[in-house]
Length: 613
Image: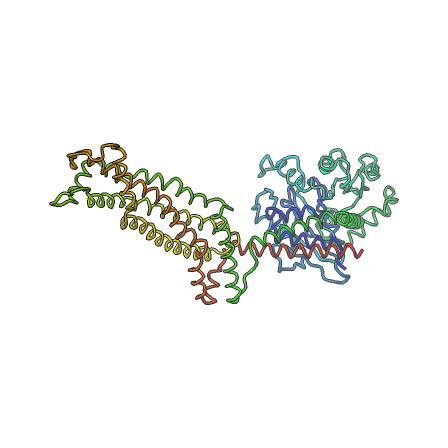
């Protein structure tokens, strides 16, 4: 059965591929941070690379003077069955297996140079390397650039702080186990690794101290003060290691032979033989593996909680993005109709007040139309000279005898024509509001966002329908005006003589009244004005009724009828083209689906592995 560390290694690897750890999806970065790992920290020339190679049992890291590790190396060790082949894989070369570890060293150097160039600059972008071998323990180690105190030629002055800041981003995380490498032939008080570890882990709860170069100490001296925890106490025991000498490295001495030589050194050393059971790189690797597994096991509840949280977020994201569309015509047509229903629901909410926008139609009737009616030039039209002119022209060669009926009719017809403008303007204003609400409703329908072609066709069909509603509404409001012109309200004029008589009181007849004097025409203008005001009040009420009936009501009930007719005639290929998604949304959905699959598999596997032990 796969170990917890092996499973975590696999999850971290998958997170890196899908989430681009080191600058990608935040949910994957948070999961990565929740999974414990071991960060290897040490100053330059502290023996850090040699310790890693001893743990792996292979010579595979670049060597040289100055800063050799210029990018973090995430090293995942996978223990395989005895007798199986040893090989390495890079995440950036997923289909290539390296059996020659000299080529692994070269690829690390080449991949570093691809990002940093041939300079001595550093980069926080990690290299991911997995090694499969029967000679390793399941473990994840992160090799970080060596801490330094001085910038060398070709490096900026900020390099010292840049390296420390990069190392801190790893070791400050509470789930990071710190493997602090210090050379035994230097005073532990000057150790760069221990100084940084103490700052981020003051109680030493997650710090493991490693002393290298024990065999290079001056004769007559030893490191027992440190190894026994008297000079620098940690919660975990110190481990001493003896790495290959430079001569061994130069002649490519076998790593297995080096491990044997290290065991022999501690077994025969008069200073360290009583500590032999907890010294050496093999013990260090096993101890780290056991501790890492215990930390992972302790973190399982919080890891599963984080995974469940991310699963919920990803499922919600997939719901927003929409599930994949079927390929057959029936499924595609069903999807289109469902999307139309979602749009129609939002559009009606705008009209009925559930969402803002419908109130603008009332604004047209309550403000715009009355204001336009008030601005009509009736004062100019019913001025005395124009009234005389119209009445005289209506009389022709024979003046009217009692009341200028033809003159009245001509004046009223001319005045009623002015109502056409505000009536049509009100219809156009309602049309513009409805068009804007269609546009707004399409943009607010989340399910439609993934189908730009469908959005365009739906919008175009709705606009055509609205134009048809507008044309019908214009015909209706013009009919309302024409109806007023076709049949005048007789009762209004029948009351006029009675009102005049009531004003005269006891003098029912005014003798010798000159019906062509100025007062006579003023009364005609006043009567026509009163009648026009009455018609204006009527139209102020009937024009909104017509617009609502012909435009708003029709939009609510049959806005999509034209679109439904068009869709019903489409073939499967044309339906598929309408559901041609935005490539960015398709890519986003695919990533979400893969991440969701990873999280669910990770949760199930972590639970099964943890319960099995």
